[in-house]
Length: 340
Image (cartoon, rainbow, N blue to C red; front, side):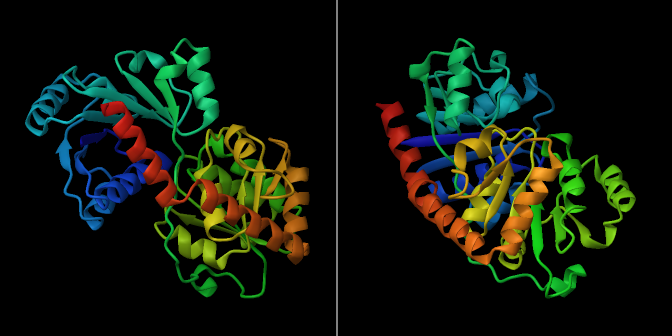
């Protein structure tokens, strides 16, 4: 069984991180695999560190004729049984051929880019429902979950982030984008006076969010960390993970909190609401509301027994449903089924 995976993104986000993580995990099973990425994509180093030398193509734009021709030549040379493309840019340049053509979706994308696929993979059951509602045959869509980095990291030194050793630390991870609702989180932090916030991510809202923190009088307790590659070390040192998103189709950060045994507080957007059983594996609060978010964060900070119970239950759910071994096994079984 020969698999080619193709990613045309030049960004660094949840989909790109999981793409590299899955490629590396599959390669360690002995699967014959070729990985194709955009030239100098941020995920390249993760692949190389995992023992994979990716093929690099231009991916100038969606439908790019040059990249389509180059990819067609690579496919002819490798002769895969399956070509799995990730997101619309890679899918738009994938040619037809004597192989199973499939794409993986991690969001509610426009299906016009995917009509020529034989099968679609969704990383939540809600996305499968979305595909069916928009005319995609349900029997040609499959749910396969994500897994996250399972490294056992040492806690980062709080002093290196100008954080006192004895204060509760809340961690938020993600792009500084309106979808992530970090503006709501900052409003909530004004109502959580004991805690410091580590906000790890970069994006266009960096300056407005810093201005908001200053306006609220919490700038001394909010630490903008920029893009980080050490989320495991941050989680190991933090007391709680928060996901305040307005739009979150899956919520990889919740899985990261669970694997590191941290209590999770999240707004009830689609992904978190599908993952978390509130009061058992985490706390869900209404979207867009700072006061309930602050109340949930204060509960976790003030009640160590609750925090511990949420962390243990979340960890158990991760191991049962989202571990690397479980997800890789699901992908391999799915590939065999598709080839047959």
